[in-house]
Length: 366
Image (cartoon, rainbow, N blue to C red; front, side):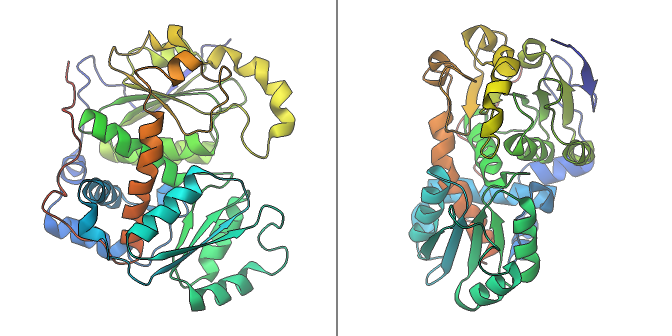
């Protein structure tokens, strides 16, 4: 296995304290009421096709609102009364579908699911024609597709917001929920050492972009030929230069996880690439997250996975079911993060008395 390392921004020193700019200090901590309101105003009516669609300030506002809706759900019980959400899914789903439906239902709205697993979007009817019909009836469109172009074309044609619930390029809702989970655990994501081990896929892309926006020091360890896309790497670098985070790419999983606060992995073969499963298995075997690999991380490090997991493939049962695993916290938090997104995009966002609570535990400083 190669050990080439590409360091995109200066690594933090041993104190774990990030170097950060004035803008970083203003945008990642507690926002003013004016800043929160301005972010909510800009997001209302917008699409979320990519994490890169969000500014640093908008991401901070979404995270803050997610904490508020989880802590005090009754404050938002009727925030989206009579709003209609339609979900078009070309891929199978458990967490994404149920958490989106639960999210809008508990905000006072309604969800309608359309199964597209047997008929790809745009096949029976053009995407522009679909968009111009849907916008007459619905308030928001949620798409889970193979091609990212399907999402961007629908967004370009529709007068109502479109949310990417997974494409071949990104999984933004997953990444927002994941870093929300880290904020709960550590009090703040800022300055965390976050390591992703495995395929540089759509989940990895959104995690890198979100990490950059939150001032996280993100390391990705992938086999040769399976690194994230260059366009995502370059965008994550650009964002992290504003926030004091860093992006590091390498092939050595042990080096990547050493000293990490969080270790994340995903399946080695994503949906749509099943024909490569046999070829990929031996390539990714050294990247399995097991107890030996976790031992190189911080003692209180957490293990993360977007699920579904292939047990004893990319992760062992001992880690997935072990005390460091937060995978089911991540799954729960999909609903809260998506509530915040729906509220922002549909104009139901508001700041509450506890909106400033950014997590339940103090961030460890060593």
